[in-house]
Length: 305
Image 1 (cartoon, rainbow, N blue to C red):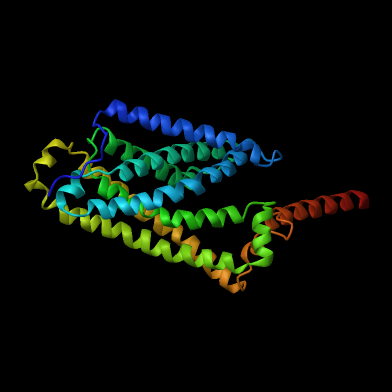
Image 2: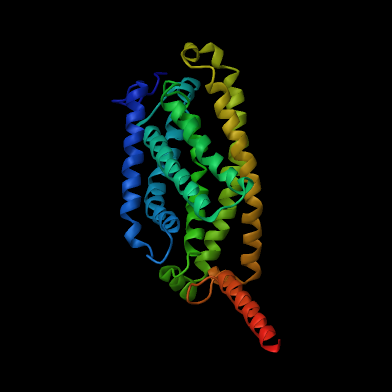
């Protein structure tokens, strides 16, 4: 079969890097323009984080179909899985890289403002950095190879859609989420169930399958001349990143499963487990009361003295 290649694309590394820079810059400007839509009472790092959701929601609507279509389009034979490209595979990779660059910046801003141990921040940061590095490597140094596998792994973003909705619903003073929580709380139960289900299918099962498909195809790659044009590093980067993603996905799934159990035990009351009816955080309120209680106790002690 003829090798499928995206039209009007080149293997020039500098051109690809220039396009990636433009994507990242445009997305970053869009996210900054969304800052006025967030509460001015919040510190900058939280506003930057919340503004990212105005970018994530529409981009996920583009990325997910692109990933699935590219997998279907390039899965026809071994040569296309190894060296084939599509306009949708380029689009997916570029959007994925750009939003992960912004995700890295957001995590660093949060770490600087709120602190935290290296162990608590490292998995997410490594996720962003390794993803950006691996996909950029594929678009530049590796001569645009293995788009099929890049998009196959990218199908895991199905879970990100439901996770984004879950985190968005937990924002304080989120009037839209409060409305759904009051009038249609089952929507959060449905989203939680879909998050759990898609996480199992598109992460815990997809990542091992990708490794299996890679190993099976790798045994036949020697028959393709195109392999000789590919740097050896690509043979190690994709498996290494996939294994890392699989390990952190297992760690994160324990929290998702615990949240799922908590949701069902609460009777599916949406975000009421974590927020009051006015959208403020129960945890923050409890901490404030604890502080006030401690201050009152200290004042009473002083009076008695």
